[in-house]
Image (cartoon, rainbow, N blue to C red):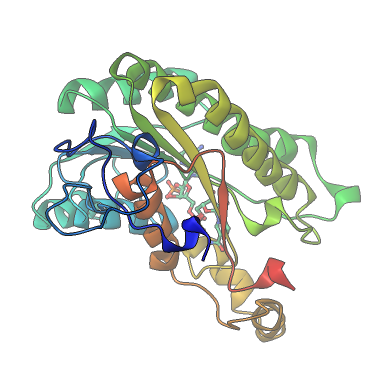
Amino acid sequence: MPSYLSLELTPSPVLYGRRTGGYAASWPVTDRASLTLDTMIPFPRFDLSGQVALVTASARGLGRAIALALAQSGADVALGLRDIHAHGGLPAEIESLGRRVLPLQMDVTRMDQIFSAVEQAASYFGKLDILVNNAGIAPGNLAEQVREEDFDLTMAVNVKGTFFASQAAARVMIPRKSGRIINVSSQAGFVALPTESVYCATKAAIVHLTKCLAVEWGQYGITVNGVAPTFIETPGTEEYLSNPAARADVIERIAALHRIGQPMDVAGPVVFLASPAASLITGHTIAIDGGWTAR
Ligand SMILES: NC(=O)c1ccc[n+]([C@@H]2O[C@H](COP(=O)([O-])OP(=O)(O)OC[C@H]3O[C@@H](n4cnc5c(N)ncnc54)[C@H](OP(=O)(O)O)[C@@H]3O)[C@@H](O)[C@H]2O)c1
């Protein structure tokens, strides 16, 4: 049997006794040693206790679920809100989970609000570990009828907002040599959706931006990843999915699981990407699409 098949894990003598540090540092290992509970190799950790997260567009839909899931996993959460007063009771829900919360005015088309929100989050909590760039809009139209103002606003929220919120967060994360940035792209970043050409282009841009920022900021211990959901039941998709023909078409195209997603279907992978268990993943965008893009 080749040695890589019979390999059993153990820390190298140098690393023995270290609880922190990545698996990468512990390879290669001797192929005759054994993995036991007392060998001190850290198991993957999924909890976010002691972490501080900022989620943009967190009042409703995916952002709300992501904020709640991060809090449930242990993180204190700063809420980026287009209108700080329109939070729908989310701060109280997060506090009821035993976490600290900070609602922030953060229209991502406004550079001043992006930078002040990140600064307030970092100063209130003393640091910022996780940024989730969730804000996104999708004004649909036939490509030949797209209006310039819709084009500009979609680019401003989806691409420019994602870039500059990431820049603001990275300026806080770089000195601490650690951070997680998670961008909400879409399956529309990989496949074409009719009447959504501008939205699709912005979500593809986010997929590529995710790779670019990952490569640039990896040296500072910052990972940058994305998620690419299929259709999820949120206020943003309510009208479209209330059309029985459109709904049936979507369910058919979700080619393996044939069900429309719920916001927590997206929040789970976001928590994973923010967790210590995902420490060697960067530049990647995870499809959460029930198989739409697999077919
Ligand atoms: N739902 C899906 O099927 C689906 C699929 C793939 C990807 N996505 C992506 O997931 C993200 C969230 O989608 P969703 O369906 O949850 O959205 P949604 O229900 O339409 O909610 C959009 C959120 O974005 C906020 N927002 C809009 N413009 C903003 C701005 N300039 N600055 C800050 N926040 C702003 C809205 O704030 P207000 O509450 O103040 O209006 C709202 O909270 C988007 O990036 C979307 O493209 C969604």
